Image 1 (cartoon, one colour):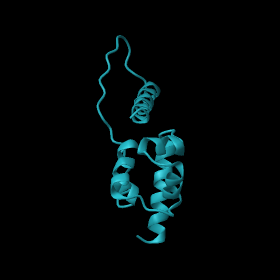
Image 2 (image 1 turned 60 degrees about the vertical axis):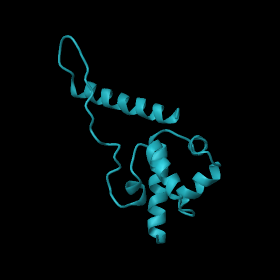
Image 3 (image 1 turned 180 degrees about the horizontal axis):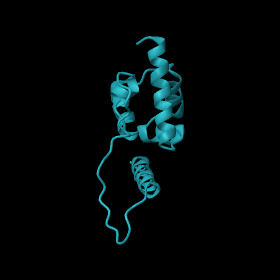
Image 4 (image 1 turned 30 degrees about the vertical axis):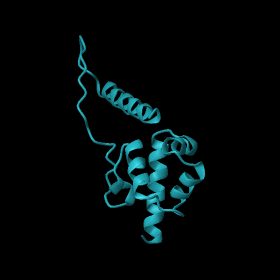
Length: 114
């Protein structure tokens, strides 16, 4: 892995961690390691071993291929069906966006408690 690939991987790990609203400390705790390990991954100084890369992808709802820079879609933008019953008027576009944001929030909370 060349330096640009290491840097890209580090940037993606950091971006996904921040997207999940997670501190380096919390992510390190979930991975069973020290915060400095996470900082080294994010800076591109150290490449995470395969098992750690797999766990990072699971925790942050993405794929190892995305973190490695092999693909450009993170996987977190995948549309999944959520059924909701409501009486009365149809949902507005703004309400649908809020429902989608809430779904992402719930999924990120689930990952933080693992």
